[in-house]
Amino acid sequence: MIVKKISLVVTALFSLSMFAQESAEFSREIKQDIKLSYLDSIKSTFKKEPLAAKVDSLWMNELVSLDIYDDLTKDIQTINKDVTVDEELPTELLKQRLAAMNQKSPFEIEYNQGLENIIKSFLKNRKKSFSRLMALSEYYFPIFEDAFAKQNVPLEIKYLAVVESALNPKAVSKMGATGLWQFMYGTGKQYALKIDSYIDERSDPLKATAACSEYMTKMFNIFGDWELVLASYNSGPGNVTKAIRRSGGKTKYWDIRNYLPKETQGYVPAFLATMYLFEYHKEHGINPERAVVKNFETDTICIKNQMSFKQIADLLDMPQSQIQLLNPSYKMNVVPFYQGEQHFIRLPKDKIATFVSNEDQIYAYVKHDAEHRSTSSRLAVKYAPKAKPAAKPAAIDNSDYELYKVRKGDNLGAIASKYNVSTTELKKWNNLKTNAVAIGRSLKIKSVEEAPAKSNSVIDKREEAIAAADDKEKSKTADQDYVVAAGDNLGSIAKKFGTTIAELKELNNLTSNNIGLGKTLIVSKASPIIEEPASVSTAIASNSVDSFKKKAVSKNIGEDYYVKKGDSLYSISKKYPGVTISDIKKWNGIKDEDIKPGMKLKING
Image (cartoon, rainbow, N blue to C red; front, side):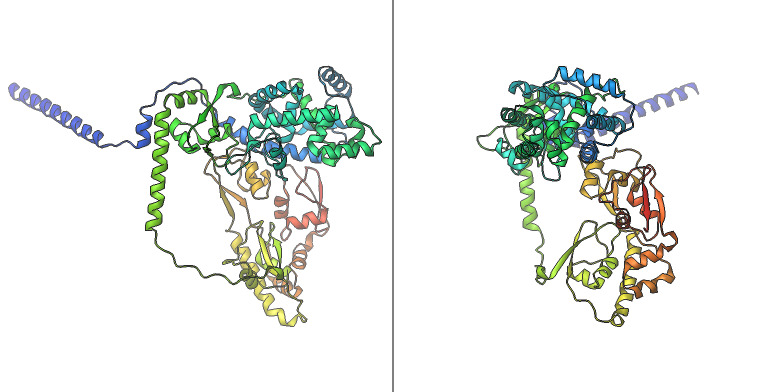
């Protein structure tokens, strides 16, 4: 019996060992069948030389965010320098600090009520923004100081980049001024900054700062006063000389300020206020956010062949957004190769080491990738099915049409009623297949004469009312969406779609400004007019959508609404059926969408 048991155990152990051997051989066979891609095979030969930590993703978001740029630009344009701001900062203490700053600066820093108001306004509303700006300054200020020292320009000019662009090299103004120093196209060309399809050196921190330094030196040779140099940088030398003449020959900024353009009147005070906040941030409890990477932790390398940011990112195992961040002058996310010109790319030093150590393999992969793409595109053209030529639409004489830009709350029925045309005609003139229209689109509307009698249009009006109702039903589900791409932030998306950051956050239930790559955001929501069934006939008979809206809110005639924190014109209009943002603006004389908590608004005024 014992012998039988022992034989069974031996047999079992032998079977297990045989099974394990077969499994190992099988797994070895599987591993042998796995083929590496060309990219992986290239990367497997790379030498690993880690020298520095990776850049934190939050830091990259801060560097490309347009939020602060939009906020500061609006502040400088709208702050009333003559209105006292309630903020705890004794005037005598401020005078002492300004006097101390004046002693160690070539600028004439003198106390005045306008400067005090701007400083207090920044302290009251922009503490968090300045905390972020101070983190950004750790990356950019060393670049500025180096360039200014070479030209003997006051180092305090570095604070001007905060006022100009909020330290964002991708900032673009409404007039097209671009980069950290906001050069216009002509000025950029004047100072030898390259601007073409691939490159815009106005966004290059080094070259744009050198151009700014050269401009400042020339203007100081003309005016001999640094405050006037700053004013000329903002409004142009011509406007400064005009202001000098109108003031009776005075040559101090504070004496000619009232004769300068309105935006320039707040420009120099904003610069001095920024300098003050950077100098005395600790005293006001502003704690700078620390930058993960500084400029000296990066280096450049000359590129010998054209390559894309994606190719570099794939090869060096780094996010493409990081390359965009460090190389903002390349517009197409491609480093071009021009014969006889050198183009450099800036990378963290550890990535530079990997690149230099493996240049041959890197350029071999870039060549292989380019050839593969070229072959794929040729095959796609060769074997693509030939499409039948589309019928050309009938030519439209634009002289017979006027343009209407679609605003929030609009729909085809309302627009058709406004211009006394039908929705069918609107769709025909604009090649529309559905009743949905995007905010910001320009619609062609043919000029027509007024109908002589109302009786002939009753049927058409009923059709338009039905179409308008259909528009409103569809608008409930036809919200306009946007998928977040690399480099996007709430500020840039809001600017792209003509809305505000607050409205985007409200529409998408966001509690912060952070958004994930690939997230789908609602950028505009239809604003349907809520109708009561009994009012439809009234709307048809009145031949006017506006008169219908007034009847729909007749219960609230003359009502006042006090703006609460977090309110926007969009959210307020939703509280009152039939009221649009345009109505609220018209009733209250509002030109833009700037409203503040505590502000009283008339509804149906």
